[in-house]
Amino acid sequence: MAVEQTTGRVTRRRVRTRANLLDAAFSVFAAKGFGRVSIEEVCEAAGYSRGAFYSNFDSLDELFFALYRQRADLIAEQVADALALDGPGLDVPAAVDRVTEVLLLDRDWLLVKTDFLVHAAREPEVARTLLEHRARLRQAIADRLARGHTPLRAVLGDVYGAAHAVVAAYDGVTTQLLLDGDVERARVWLKQLLTALLTDGSDTTV
Image (cartoon, rainbow, N blue to C red; front, side, top):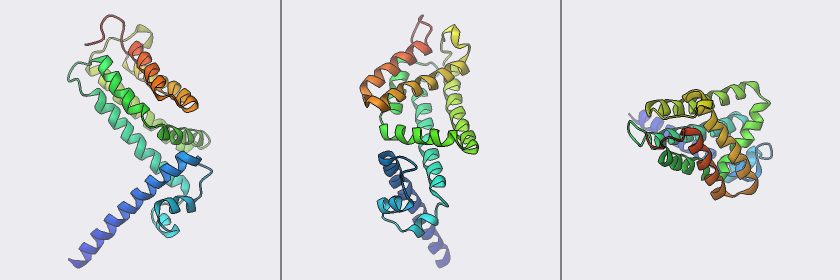
């Protein structure tokens, strides 16, 4: 029994240490950029030794990927939840409001995500994983549009085409946001783009 209790405490402590390292790394990567950060800087920000780092991660690359996956999965879940609040139908303007609030509030996340995109572009295996995440996000959007029987512009083809367009619009708007830092302007533009993409002009509530 004592061994089990000790093991449980060690496991909880390890989980907490890993979470603290990820949180510290997020702040450091957002401030300085991946490739300009050392393991020592992450450890210092988290208040841990290199030993604590290496007991959880083999390298900064592994930590960076774990961080990206953690945040990306959270964003995908938040988007899916935002699109699920209207019941069987889909109030497009209300859904767009909720989605843009989720996607545009965290500029630090956009900085880290962009670093990861550049990193993945040079690492085929990492790129495949990133593409899998983006596919899951598009699938969540497509599934919700299909359930809501949302009228789409003919040029988009189907709900999968619309989901691709939504993610592309987000990518474009957030690139500008990273440069000018104008969150409110970016939110307005994204709302306008998504509303135009996700309605055929006949009715915005279905």
